[in-house]
Amino acid sequence: MLHTPLADTKSVAIATSALKKQYKNGNAPVLRGVNLTIRHGERVALIGSNGSGKSTLLKCLIGLHAVNEGSVQTLGETFGSMPTAAQRTQLRKQTGFVFQKHCLVKRHSVLSNVVHGMLGLPGSWRAFTQATAPSSWRAKAMSALEDVNLAERARSRADALSGGQQQRVAIARAIVRGPQLIIADEPAASLDPVSGAEVMRLFSELAQAHGITLLFTSHDMDHAAAYSDRIVALKNGQILFDKASREVSDQDLRDTFQ
Amino acid sequence: MSGVSPDLRSRFSGMSSINFVLILVVAAIVISSINSVAPSIGQLADGVPSMINLLDRMWPPNTDANFLTQVGMRLVETFQIALAGAAIGIALSLPIGWLAAKKVSPIGPASWLVKAIISLLRTIPDLVWALLFVVTVGLGAVAGTMTIVVDTIGFCGRFFAEAMEDADKEPQEALAAIGANKVSILMGGILPDAAPSMINTALFALEKAVRWSVVLGLVGAGGIGQELKAAFDLFQYKNASAIILVIFVIVLVMEFITDWLRSKLQ
Image (cartoon, rainbow over all chains, first blue to last red; front, side, top):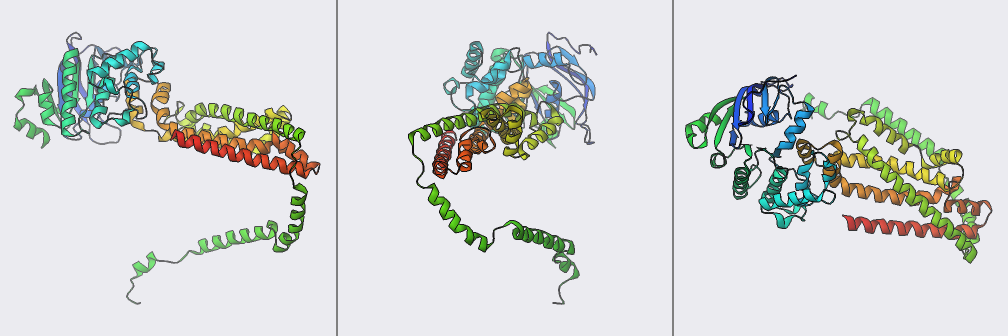
């Protein structure tokens, strides 16, 4: 079924219309009519208490979870419940993911883990390790590692790195295929405050430098304020407020988390 | 004593009559089996002179150069059976283990069917497989190699599947989100994590293959076992003792090599 675009695809990276999501376990709906628009190149922080629907929203935007009602437009692909296989391929080509836990393959080298970012692209069956990947992909992976200041650790095993360094490798894996959009689910949550701030700064700088749209969730309000242009707060599956980061007040935050 | 409440007494109730009867039945079966087939003290005492006589006829082992050359040739064949059988079996166990691994298998819930086939391969004893292959492909090393292949799949298929099931799920989810297909997730996410356990299993399979390739000759499936059987059938006990010593050395050397490899690969 064809879906009408929700917004101008040239300027808008993500748009949702009356998005509803309820899991099959019979609990209350997780998302209850979310209308969200994010323009290309914006850095948006999604905040909210546990269970407010942040992670579910991220997964719905890229078709990892089916939505019950409403529609989604991500990077020009408009879909209802789930994207088609072709749309999913397109979305994954242009989207990078960073998870709360870095999710690296521990016994592989740092370089191999970054090369994994190419999996899913045509001809990517060779990218399960750097040794078998095309040399141009290895070069791109090295360039991504330079971006996150880890080129000198390319040959190290992933589990030999600190938590912050591993998350930087995950960022390199996300940017290696030159995505238009990066979605990050609490990327600094498992890190100490110093490493967390460093990872967020790197994220923000890379997004700005490469013109990448950045959508991340965070429980750290300092991170949300410092590394985003806009903050969107979710409460009970609905948008509580959507403001420029500098305009968010203490009262807004109290309303969000109480 | 009267202070113990009925509630507390019920929590420490004795053995139920059904359990008591079951224990009696199991004990009766074990005792009757021992009576039927275990050697009595008298039989053991009667057997000692025969054993001493046999050992006397076996000593010294035959060290004739021609005989040892013949044993050496059979030894090479034994190793070939073990190596070829284990290598083919391990290689086939990789896709079979993948198909059988729950939540990882590309065929989804049908993985139980592959697991059932692996169990079938494992539960039929090797000597029975050897007899089947001797009947189907004839006497000799090919039947032995096929037996080792089947035995290795039964062993490695199960443990490879378990290692894949136990592999870290988070990298797999990350690769799936990136858009990796099932083969890429296997190669990039599952195998690197499962590799140490799988290499261990493969080394045990190789060790097992050497041990089994030695005895497969007893049913005509090639290797040094065939020489051993001939030696006993023809009452050439000095030849038999030489072959037994060679087998002992081979198995010991193989265990030493695989232990060393295991320690290097950990």
